[in-house]
Image (cartoon, rainbow, N blue to C red; front, side, top):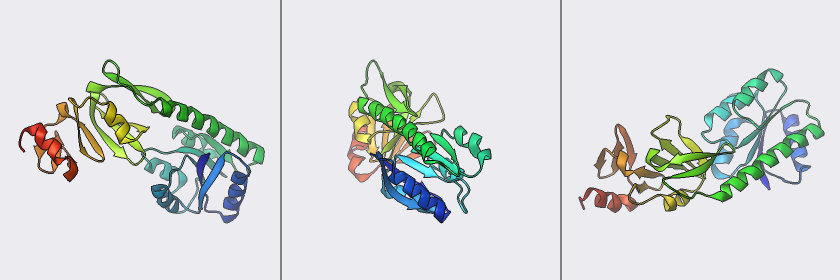
Length: 236
């Protein structure tokens, strides 16, 4: 099942959207929201695979909502304005529907999301395997090569991780538990300093009791990992 969230500030449009979702057997509606802020609260507590999102909403617009997310799920935009189509596709949305939306067109968009969801699930099941100093991770429905020596640190974000690399300013974002990648990384090269951080030892420039520095970047060291950092420095 694809867990989805419906967002539209117009009550009748939201009601129709919920009704259409109920007609698609592989969709599970988690919640229906009339604004993006309410949707953000839902996404903090629930795992969401697909957003049905209106664009023109008071406060935080649909496009602003997409831009605020570091690792957005699949998104189907639903709006009365065709002029936003280009902006939507620039943000890599799955599909763009113009109101009024026929059930046939709605199902076509859902089937497209289902194909992407199944592809992503297949790639996620591959996991990672470090071979000859590199591994592959799923990023935006592609498998991207990551070289061990290029990793500066890894940041955990709920169901996702950010892999910060020396070769690029933009981190790679992939859906993976921290434990999965931690088990594959060589312990001689990496150290876990926090439930949300794994750091390449080669890039550590300074250490304090409760923090590790990578040049000017300061990362926290939690109590449960403090002994590991102390062993690294030789200062127990």
